[in-house]
Image (cartoon, rainbow, N blue to C red; front, side, top):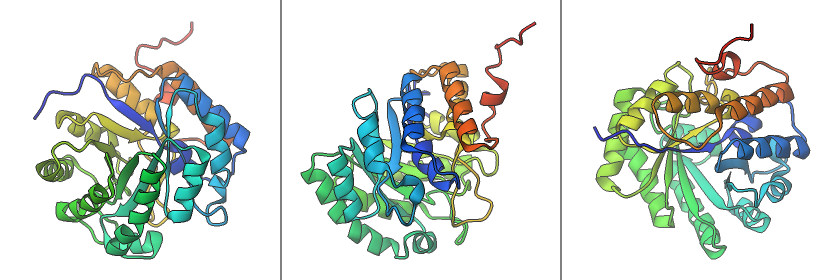
Length: 304
């Protein structure tokens, strides 16, 4: 075990991972308002959208406009990019960071993008070249890094195969996605340990879902391993469209509350974040799974 980090960097993924799952499509003005609220609350890393086909994912059809509206406000804006066309659009829009993605599991990758992991890594190389030529940093996200709903346990070697591909493209950081909430503390320890044995200097972010109710337990495991980067979603938005029962990400405000109680600095104003979470809930017109947005911090007293 290593000392728990004194400071943690959070990346908000709700505007991409969450918004793409909602049937209600928000206007670009509404998204801009939410983005500004997140930035005002102190978030400095936001996965703001994905440059996918507007016909395939109409919820994110306004990606270029949204990026231009939120640039220069003090946060690094990243976007998930699935193909060469998306990469060119992202660079043209002025995105700060491009993230490519592939699953560690072949079955999930086939259902997600209709190709094998090997085929995905081969096609992603050109995205890496576009990012490099455009001067845009590149990150790699590994889906089903802690388990696959179709194949079961995923060997750390399968995760390493994807990360090796990302490293060859020039990625300077990776994110490990618990796509359907299959992570447990022992699995987190095994996967992180395997990566560090091969890539000791590569920054690792952990992206947990709360499908089975232990998302924050897995965060504490990551902290005990010295991980200082996590991804989360405002209000607990998100899920996986290819696996039944896969619920949303850990809620950003719940994560910030936990880190505050552990004495870990995030630079995020929790009350302001809670207000933004409530605005997101109102925007989508449904109850979100986040808990702290409902109960508030433990020392918040009820009015007499």
